Image 1 (cartoon, rainbow, N blue to C red):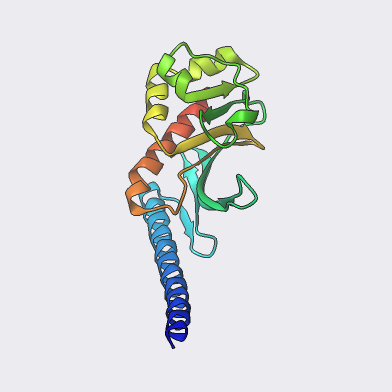
Image 2: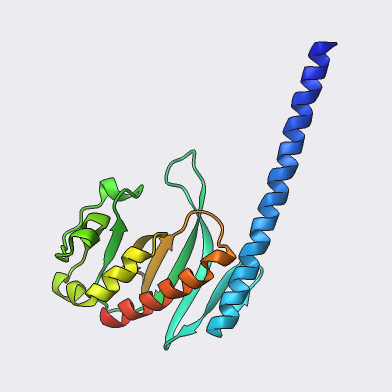
Length: 192
């Protein structure tokens, strides 16, 4: 009899836990949708509820923000915030990666900014170190350092891409995400 009660309790616990996870995931997805819709209204861009993405133009450049699944390890599935800003084909290459990231062991930075705090926090690689140093002014480096969830910034396929912030995009991220997006536009303008 005691064994049956324990088995029933375990089954009930698993089912209740599954229901709770499902409901909390739905609530997080709803908050992400509301957050992106709010950002779209603020930036006068477009929000697509189906894909949970925001697209539009900021200072004349195409921009987007969306959630993305990423696998750093086969057993892990993490949700990240992906931001993109359009750049031209002749844009200087740039890869900026936070030290300690899952990709850091395979990444060798070749650009030093001379800012010890920044160089300790980020690895930078580029085909034009002088141009990148001009773009990464003291003000830009400070803004990048202040954005704790910014993990990776790189030029790829005609876009300046930022991936960061593990988890769902929340209302508390709106101001920070808009700062990062504007910072990315500024960096993209400087890389021309």
